[in-house]
Length: 387
Image (cartoon, rainbow, N blue to C red; front, side, top):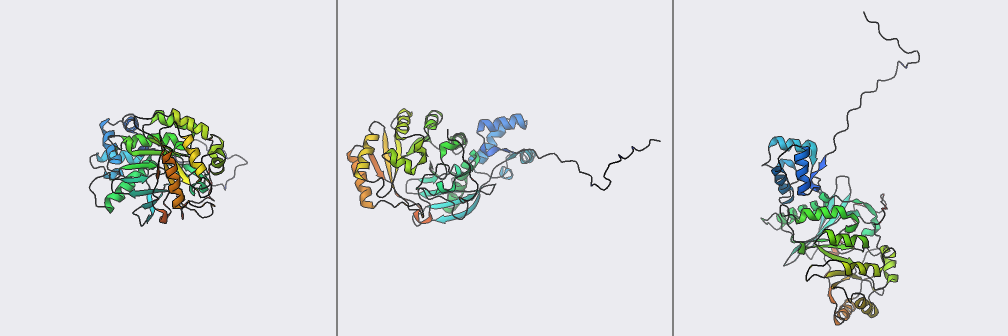
Protein backbone atom coordinates (compact mmCIF):
# COMPACT_ATOMS: atom_id res chain seq x y z
CA UNK A 1 0.00 0.00 0.00
CA UNK A 2 1.40 3.41 -1.05
CA UNK A 3 1.98 5.93 1.73
CA UNK A 4 0.73 9.54 1.21
CA UNK A 5 3.42 12.16 0.68
CA UNK A 6 4.27 13.98 3.94
CA UNK A 7 2.92 17.51 4.35
CA UNK A 8 5.71 20.12 4.25
CA UNK A 9 6.26 21.56 7.74
CA UNK A 10 5.61 25.18 6.61
CA UNK A 11 2.50 24.45 4.51
CA UNK A 12 -0.59 26.65 5.05
CA UNK A 13 -3.34 24.10 5.57
CA UNK A 14 -6.04 26.82 5.51
CA UNK A 15 -5.16 28.21 2.05
CA UNK A 16 -7.81 27.94 -0.67
CA UNK A 17 -6.62 25.87 -3.62
CA UNK A 18 -6.02 28.01 -6.74
CA UNK A 19 -8.14 26.72 -9.63
CA UNK A 20 -6.42 26.01 -12.90
CA UNK A 21 -6.69 29.00 -15.30
CA UNK A 22 -9.03 28.47 -18.24
CA UNK A 23 -7.39 29.18 -21.60
CA UNK A 24 -8.12 32.66 -22.98
CA UNK A 25 -10.79 32.67 -25.68
CA UNK A 26 -9.43 32.77 -29.21
CA UNK A 27 -9.40 36.25 -30.76
CA UNK A 28 -12.12 36.59 -33.36
CA UNK A 29 -11.17 37.77 -36.85
CA UNK A 30 -12.97 40.94 -37.88
CA UNK A 31 -14.09 39.71 -41.29
CA UNK A 32 -15.92 42.97 -42.06
CA UNK A 33 -12.49 44.65 -42.23
CA UNK A 34 -11.07 42.25 -44.83
CA UNK A 35 -10.86 42.78 -48.57
CA UNK A 36 -12.17 39.92 -50.70
CA UNK A 37 -8.59 38.66 -51.11
CA UNK A 38 -8.02 38.71 -47.35
CA UNK A 39 -11.36 37.05 -46.67
CA UNK A 40 -10.58 34.30 -49.20
CA UNK A 41 -7.27 33.58 -47.44
CA UNK A 42 -9.03 33.46 -44.07
CA UNK A 43 -11.73 31.04 -45.20
CA UNK A 44 -9.45 28.73 -47.17
CA UNK A 45 -6.36 28.74 -44.93
CA UNK A 46 -7.89 29.18 -41.47
CA UNK A 47 -11.28 27.50 -41.83
CA UNK A 48 -10.55 24.98 -44.59
CA UNK A 49 -13.45 26.21 -46.73
CA UNK A 50 -13.64 26.50 -50.51
CA UNK A 51 -12.83 29.89 -52.03
CA UNK A 52 -16.30 30.58 -53.43
CA UNK A 53 -17.63 30.77 -49.86
CA UNK A 54 -15.61 33.95 -49.39
CA UNK A 55 -17.45 35.64 -52.26
CA UNK A 56 -20.79 34.64 -50.75
CA UNK A 57 -19.86 35.99 -47.32
CA UNK A 58 -18.36 39.16 -48.82
CA UNK A 59 -21.48 39.92 -50.85
CA UNK A 60 -23.70 39.43 -47.80
CA UNK A 61 -21.64 41.92 -45.81
CA UNK A 62 -20.81 44.51 -48.45
CA UNK A 63 -23.67 44.38 -50.97
CA UNK A 64 -26.58 43.58 -48.69
CA UNK A 65 -25.10 45.10 -45.53
CA UNK A 66 -25.68 42.00 -43.37
CA UNK A 67 -24.64 42.47 -39.74
CA UNK A 68 -24.89 38.83 -38.56
CA UNK A 69 -24.05 35.39 -39.91
CA UNK A 70 -27.62 34.21 -39.27
CA UNK A 71 -28.82 36.40 -42.16
CA UNK A 72 -26.64 34.53 -44.66
CA UNK A 73 -29.14 31.91 -45.65
CA UNK A 74 -27.18 30.42 -48.56
CA UNK A 75 -24.31 29.48 -46.22
CA UNK A 76 -24.65 26.10 -44.55
CA UNK A 77 -25.63 26.04 -40.90
CA UNK A 78 -22.32 24.30 -40.11
CA UNK A 79 -20.33 27.12 -41.72
CA UNK A 80 -22.38 29.78 -39.96
CA UNK A 81 -21.71 28.09 -36.63
CA UNK A 82 -18.01 27.85 -37.43
CA UNK A 83 -17.93 31.54 -38.34
CA UNK A 84 -19.52 32.46 -35.00
CA UNK A 85 -16.63 30.83 -33.14
CA UNK A 86 -13.84 32.26 -35.31
CA UNK A 87 -15.07 35.53 -36.84
CA UNK A 88 -17.14 38.64 -36.20
CA UNK A 89 -18.82 41.46 -38.07
CA UNK A 90 -18.07 44.57 -36.02
CA UNK A 91 -21.32 46.39 -35.31
CA UNK A 92 -22.21 50.07 -35.10
CA UNK A 93 -25.28 50.78 -33.00
CA UNK A 94 -27.36 53.88 -33.79
CA UNK A 95 -27.27 56.04 -30.67
CA UNK A 96 -28.93 59.23 -31.94
CA UNK A 97 -30.43 60.79 -35.05
CA UNK A 98 -31.03 64.47 -35.78
CA UNK A 99 -32.88 65.87 -38.78
CA UNK A 100 -32.26 69.31 -40.25
CA UNK A 101 -34.81 71.57 -41.90
CA UNK A 102 -32.79 71.21 -45.12
CA UNK A 103 -33.16 67.40 -45.22
CA UNK A 104 -29.74 66.61 -43.79
CA UNK A 105 -29.64 63.82 -41.20
CA UNK A 106 -26.86 63.42 -38.65
CA UNK A 107 -26.37 59.95 -37.17
CA UNK A 108 -24.40 59.18 -34.03
CA UNK A 109 -23.09 55.63 -33.77
CA UNK A 110 -21.82 53.80 -30.70
CA UNK A 111 -18.87 51.49 -31.27
CA UNK A 112 -18.29 48.18 -29.54
CA UNK A 113 -15.91 49.77 -27.03
CA UNK A 114 -18.37 52.53 -26.10
CA UNK A 115 -16.96 55.29 -28.31
CA UNK A 116 -19.09 57.58 -30.48
CA UNK A 117 -18.71 58.70 -34.08
CA UNK A 118 -20.95 60.71 -36.39
CA UNK A 119 -21.93 60.47 -40.06
CA UNK A 120 -23.96 63.03 -42.01
CA UNK A 121 -26.38 62.18 -44.82
CA UNK A 122 -26.97 65.00 -47.33
CA UNK A 123 -29.62 64.30 -49.96
CA UNK A 124 -30.13 66.54 -53.00
CA UNK A 125 -31.98 66.27 -56.31
CA UNK A 126 -29.12 64.64 -58.20
CA UNK A 127 -27.21 62.76 -55.51
CA UNK A 128 -27.29 61.19 -52.07
CA UNK A 129 -24.05 61.98 -50.25
CA UNK A 130 -22.66 60.60 -46.99
CA UNK A 131 -19.97 62.38 -44.98
CA UNK A 132 -17.91 59.58 -43.38
CA UNK A 133 -15.70 59.60 -40.25
CA UNK A 134 -12.34 57.81 -40.10
CA UNK A 135 -11.31 58.34 -36.45
CA UNK A 136 -12.89 58.80 -33.05
CA UNK A 137 -11.96 62.44 -32.45
CA UNK A 138 -8.99 64.03 -34.21
CA UNK A 139 -5.35 64.79 -33.40
CA UNK A 140 -4.99 67.76 -35.75
CA UNK A 141 -6.39 70.34 -33.26
CA UNK A 142 -7.51 72.94 -35.82
CA UNK A 143 -8.68 75.82 -33.67
CA UNK A 144 -11.91 76.54 -35.58
CA UNK A 145 -13.11 72.90 -35.55
CA UNK A 146 -15.17 71.30 -32.77
CA UNK A 147 -13.88 67.79 -33.56
CA UNK A 148 -10.37 69.02 -32.81
CA UNK A 149 -11.38 69.80 -29.23
CA UNK A 150 -11.91 66.07 -28.58
CA UNK A 151 -8.37 64.97 -29.27
CA UNK A 152 -7.79 61.57 -30.87
CA UNK A 153 -9.36 58.62 -29.06
CA UNK A 154 -8.50 55.94 -31.62
CA UNK A 155 -8.53 55.03 -35.29
CA UNK A 156 -11.56 53.36 -36.80
CA UNK A 157 -11.05 49.93 -38.34
CA UNK A 158 -11.82 49.43 -42.04
CA UNK A 159 -14.98 47.58 -40.98
CA UNK A 160 -16.13 50.51 -38.83
CA UNK A 161 -15.51 52.98 -41.66
CA UNK A 162 -17.46 50.83 -44.14
CA UNK A 163 -20.17 50.06 -41.56
CA UNK A 164 -21.22 53.74 -41.59
CA UNK A 165 -22.00 53.42 -45.29
CA UNK A 166 -23.95 50.19 -44.85
CA UNK A 167 -25.86 51.55 -41.86
CA UNK A 168 -26.92 54.75 -43.63
CA UNK A 169 -27.85 52.78 -46.76
CA UNK A 170 -30.25 50.79 -44.55
CA UNK A 171 -31.62 53.96 -42.97
CA UNK A 172 -32.18 55.70 -46.32
CA UNK A 173 -33.68 52.60 -47.90
CA UNK A 174 -36.20 52.38 -45.07
CA UNK A 175 -36.84 56.14 -44.87
CA UNK A 176 -37.39 56.65 -48.59
CA UNK A 177 -38.98 53.23 -49.23
CA UNK A 178 -36.38 52.24 -51.83
CA UNK A 179 -35.66 48.77 -53.22
CA UNK A 180 -31.95 49.19 -53.92
CA UNK A 181 -29.44 48.02 -51.32
CA UNK A 182 -27.21 51.02 -52.10
CA UNK A 183 -29.15 54.28 -52.35
CA UNK A 184 -26.06 56.37 -51.52
CA UNK A 185 -24.32 57.73 -54.61
CA UNK A 186 -21.41 59.79 -53.24
CA UNK A 187 -19.00 59.53 -50.32
CA UNK A 188 -16.92 62.35 -48.82
CA UNK A 189 -14.38 61.51 -46.15
CA UNK A 190 -14.73 64.82 -44.34
CA UNK A 191 -16.25 63.67 -41.04
CA UNK A 192 -14.51 63.15 -37.72
CA UNK A 193 -10.77 62.57 -37.93
CA UNK A 194 -7.95 63.10 -40.42
CA UNK A 195 -8.29 60.34 -43.07
CA UNK A 196 -4.60 60.25 -44.03
CA UNK A 197 -3.67 59.87 -40.34
CA UNK A 198 -5.43 56.49 -40.53
CA UNK A 199 -4.18 55.72 -44.01
CA UNK A 200 -3.88 51.93 -44.03
CA UNK A 201 -7.39 51.44 -42.66
CA UNK A 202 -8.73 54.12 -45.03
CA UNK A 203 -7.08 52.41 -48.00
CA UNK A 204 -8.59 49.03 -47.08
CA UNK A 205 -12.02 50.63 -46.59
CA UNK A 206 -11.77 52.28 -50.03
CA UNK A 207 -10.91 48.92 -51.64
CA UNK A 208 -14.00 47.38 -50.06
CA UNK A 209 -16.25 50.30 -51.00
CA UNK A 210 -15.03 50.34 -54.61
CA UNK A 211 -15.10 46.56 -55.11
CA UNK A 212 -17.47 45.14 -57.75
CA UNK A 213 -18.47 42.36 -55.34
CA UNK A 214 -19.19 45.01 -52.70
CA UNK A 215 -20.84 48.45 -52.82
CA UNK A 216 -19.10 49.24 -56.14
CA UNK A 217 -18.71 53.01 -55.67
CA UNK A 218 -16.99 54.75 -58.56
CA UNK A 219 -13.69 56.54 -57.93
CA UNK A 220 -15.37 59.60 -59.44
CA UNK A 221 -17.87 59.68 -56.58
CA UNK A 222 -15.46 59.45 -53.63
CA UNK A 223 -13.51 62.41 -52.20
CA UNK A 224 -11.01 62.29 -49.35
CA UNK A 225 -10.08 65.50 -47.52
CA UNK A 226 -6.83 66.13 -45.64
CA UNK A 227 -5.45 69.00 -43.56
CA UNK A 228 -2.16 68.47 -45.37
CA UNK A 229 -0.11 65.49 -44.15
CA UNK A 230 2.45 66.02 -46.88
CA UNK A 231 4.24 62.61 -46.84
CA UNK A 232 0.89 60.81 -47.01
CA UNK A 233 -0.43 62.85 -49.96
CA UNK A 234 2.11 61.19 -52.27
CA UNK A 235 1.17 57.71 -51.00
CA UNK A 236 -2.52 58.55 -51.31
CA UNK A 237 -2.01 59.47 -54.98
CA UNK A 238 0.04 56.35 -55.70
CA UNK A 239 -2.10 53.81 -53.85
CA UNK A 240 -5.68 55.02 -54.43
CA UNK A 241 -7.59 56.50 -57.35
CA UNK A 242 -10.22 58.65 -55.62
CA UNK A 243 -10.41 62.44 -55.53
CA UNK A 244 -8.32 64.65 -53.23
CA UNK A 245 -9.45 67.71 -51.28
CA UNK A 246 -7.07 69.93 -49.31
CA UNK A 247 -8.24 71.89 -46.29
CA UNK A 248 -6.21 75.07 -46.89
CA UNK A 249 -8.09 77.86 -45.07
CA UNK A 250 -5.36 80.50 -45.23
CA UNK A 251 -3.28 82.52 -47.68
CA UNK A 252 -0.20 82.96 -45.43
CA UNK A 253 1.79 80.66 -43.15
CA UNK A 254 1.20 83.03 -40.24
CA UNK A 255 -2.57 82.64 -40.57
CA UNK A 256 -2.46 78.91 -41.16
CA UNK A 257 -0.12 78.16 -38.27
CA UNK A 258 -2.43 80.03 -35.89
CA UNK A 259 -5.43 77.92 -36.85
CA UNK A 260 -3.93 74.67 -38.13
CA UNK A 261 -0.98 73.33 -36.10
CA UNK A 262 -0.05 70.92 -38.92
CA UNK A 263 1.28 73.95 -40.83
CA UNK A 264 4.14 74.27 -38.35
CA UNK A 265 5.48 70.95 -39.63
CA UNK A 266 4.53 71.26 -43.31
CA UNK A 267 3.99 74.84 -44.43
CA UNK A 268 1.96 76.06 -47.38
CA UNK A 269 4.92 75.83 -49.78
CA UNK A 270 5.54 72.17 -48.87
CA UNK A 271 1.84 71.39 -49.10
CA UNK A 272 1.40 72.98 -52.53
CA UNK A 273 4.57 71.29 -53.80
CA UNK A 274 3.01 67.93 -52.88
CA UNK A 275 -0.14 68.99 -54.73
CA UNK A 276 1.84 69.85 -57.87
CA UNK A 277 3.34 66.34 -57.82
CA UNK A 278 0.01 64.64 -57.14
CA UNK A 279 -0.97 62.26 -60.00
CA UNK A 280 -4.24 63.62 -61.41
CA UNK A 281 -6.45 61.70 -63.80
CA UNK A 282 -7.32 63.42 -67.07
CA UNK A 283 -9.67 66.34 -66.46
CA UNK A 284 -9.47 66.21 -62.67
CA UNK A 285 -8.61 69.05 -60.33
CA UNK A 286 -7.64 69.18 -56.68
CA UNK A 287 -10.31 70.75 -54.51
CA UNK A 288 -9.08 73.34 -52.03
CA UNK A 289 -11.42 73.95 -49.10
CA UNK A 290 -11.24 77.46 -47.69
CA UNK A 291 -13.23 78.18 -44.53
CA UNK A 292 -14.01 81.91 -44.49
CA UNK A 293 -13.34 83.43 -41.06
CA UNK A 294 -14.52 87.01 -40.61
CA UNK A 295 -11.70 89.58 -40.49
CA UNK A 296 -9.10 86.80 -40.38
CA UNK A 297 -8.69 85.27 -43.85
CA UNK A 298 -11.43 86.86 -45.96
CA UNK A 299 -9.89 90.12 -47.22
CA UNK A 300 -9.29 91.11 -50.83
CA UNK A 301 -5.56 90.66 -50.18
CA UNK A 302 -6.21 87.07 -49.09
CA UNK A 303 -8.04 86.41 -52.35
CA UNK A 304 -5.19 87.87 -54.42
CA UNK A 305 -2.61 85.79 -52.51
CA UNK A 306 -4.71 82.66 -53.00
CA UNK A 307 -4.79 83.27 -56.75
CA UNK A 308 -0.98 83.41 -56.79
CA UNK A 309 -0.63 80.28 -54.64
CA UNK A 310 -2.80 78.17 -56.93
CA UNK A 311 -1.59 79.64 -60.22
CA UNK A 312 0.06 76.46 -61.59
CA UNK A 313 -2.17 73.82 -59.93
CA UNK A 314 -5.31 72.37 -61.58
CA UNK A 315 -7.63 73.51 -58.82
CA UNK A 316 -11.06 74.53 -57.77
CA UNK A 317 -11.84 76.29 -54.50
CA UNK A 318 -14.79 75.55 -52.26
CA UNK A 319 -15.44 78.59 -50.10
CA UNK A 320 -17.09 77.54 -46.85
CA UNK A 321 -18.78 80.20 -44.71
CA UNK A 322 -17.68 79.33 -41.18
CA UNK A 323 -20.14 77.44 -39.02
CA UNK A 324 -19.83 79.21 -35.69
CA UNK A 325 -18.99 77.01 -32.72
CA UNK A 326 -19.37 78.10 -29.09
CA UNK A 327 -16.15 79.04 -27.36
CA UNK A 328 -13.81 78.92 -30.37
CA UNK A 329 -13.75 82.67 -30.97
CA UNK A 330 -14.34 82.89 -34.73
CA UNK A 331 -17.19 84.52 -36.65
CA UNK A 332 -18.58 83.66 -40.06
CA UNK A 333 -17.94 85.91 -43.04
CA UNK A 334 -20.92 87.95 -44.17
CA UNK A 335 -22.61 86.86 -47.40
CA UNK A 336 -21.55 89.99 -49.33
CA UNK A 337 -17.91 89.49 -48.39
CA UNK A 338 -18.03 85.82 -49.33
CA UNK A 339 -19.45 86.69 -52.74
CA UNK A 340 -16.80 89.40 -53.23
CA UNK A 341 -14.08 86.84 -52.37
CA UNK A 342 -15.52 84.38 -54.90
CA UNK A 343 -15.68 87.06 -57.63
CA UNK A 344 -12.05 88.01 -57.08
CA UNK A 345 -10.95 84.36 -57.42
CA UNK A 346 -13.07 83.90 -60.54
CA UNK A 347 -11.64 87.07 -62.11
CA UNK A 348 -8.19 85.64 -61.34
CA UNK A 349 -9.07 82.49 -63.33
CA UNK A 350 -9.54 80.27 -60.27
CA UNK A 351 -12.76 78.25 -60.30
CA UNK A 352 -14.47 79.10 -57.02
CA UNK A 353 -17.80 78.17 -55.48
CA UNK A 354 -19.52 79.07 -52.24
CA UNK A 355 -20.49 75.80 -50.67
CA UNK A 356 -23.97 75.54 -49.26
CA UNK A 357 -23.85 74.68 -45.60
CA UNK A 358 -25.96 71.66 -44.76
CA UNK A 359 -27.20 70.65 -41.32
CA UNK A 360 -26.04 73.75 -39.48
CA UNK A 361 -29.13 73.70 -37.22
CA UNK A 362 -28.22 70.19 -35.98
CA UNK A 363 -24.45 70.82 -35.62
CA UNK A 364 -23.92 68.62 -38.66
CA UNK A 365 -22.09 71.10 -40.88
CA UNK A 366 -18.37 71.37 -41.65
CA UNK A 367 -16.31 71.60 -38.45
CA UNK A 368 -19.24 70.96 -36.11
CA UNK A 369 -19.03 67.21 -35.47
CA UNK A 370 -18.21 66.82 -31.80
CA UNK A 371 -20.50 64.10 -30.44
CA UNK A 372 -22.41 66.46 -28.22
CA UNK A 373 -23.84 64.21 -25.54
CA UNK A 374 -21.42 61.43 -26.45
CA UNK A 375 -17.62 61.57 -26.58
CA UNK A 376 -16.03 64.50 -24.78
CA UNK A 377 -12.66 66.15 -24.54
CA UNK A 378 -12.09 65.16 -20.90
CA UNK A 379 -11.65 61.49 -21.82
CA UNK A 380 -8.21 60.04 -22.45
CA UNK A 381 -6.66 60.97 -25.78
CA UNK A 382 -3.80 59.66 -27.88
CA UNK A 383 -0.91 61.78 -29.11
CA UNK A 384 0.58 59.72 -31.96
CA UNK A 385 3.52 60.92 -34.03
CA UNK A 386 2.63 62.40 -37.40
CA UNK A 387 4.15 60.62 -40.43
